[in-house]
Length: 380
Image 1 (spheres, one colour):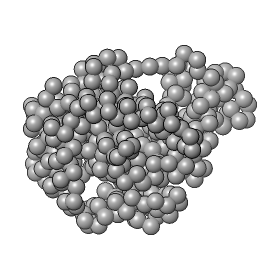
Image 2: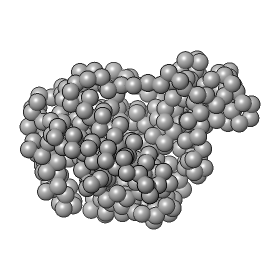
Image 3: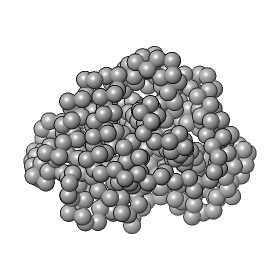
């Protein structure tokens, strides 16, 4: 394979973490969870490298409610999230009802780029950014010889077309997986994942007790946007292609925010009645003018989503929209504010955002509304 992980690096890391697992004296519970997660991650990477099945599922799901809709772990994770963040996301769902979806049949045109072409284009992109300090690091991540980038065909049509695997012991080392669709979206995906590799390196807000963990996807969305701006400025793809890329990204956010809203409804019903009935859920949707009606199977699928992931994607996207607006006024300042938010070590998430130009929670989601108006005009 042209671009692949260095198997010896993976094996060495696995040995390091296995040694840690055997010497747990003095480690916090959070550290033990981290070791377990990293070993699981390394096993997944080994399976991918060996082209073996990486999927697993739990047959012994425990439920909180009598009607067995709401997984107990999902309820526990949901209730750890700050109420103010839950409120921000719920309010965004009401705004999203103004979005009139056209057709899901908009496909990104195929583009004949070799893996080397793709990597070279990404190299040019990072040289184009306002901050040049990452170029040497990016060159290292993109190097075949470094063995931290794997590019493969997305033969199984996975929903996630890119992944970053960060490790912090004995030193910081990220690995990247890109599943090619053979469209220009491969370029956006590569930049998205390399951005994760850059900004996860600081170790900022790794702790699950720090509320800024919910901004972990901020660099992903912001670099998706910057990638589109690069493509537009360099006239690499058509305006229509850029529209479709933006549209597809937005649909994924609509899905995540809707899923979180349904989870909020389910948790509310659980606390009031200890059971969740589909009729009650649909009634609540009608009362709040949410244009969605569900059957039991669909509701079950929605409630399997991880609440922290849903919050992370939606909150990061709302933040990135405000940064897009700043970008139209001053590119360098927008990038500066992005980095200030991403590297901020405070546990006060609201202050972190408002101190750096993020206003969606105060201005009625103006930039979200503008995005909806823009995307609603896209023709089939």
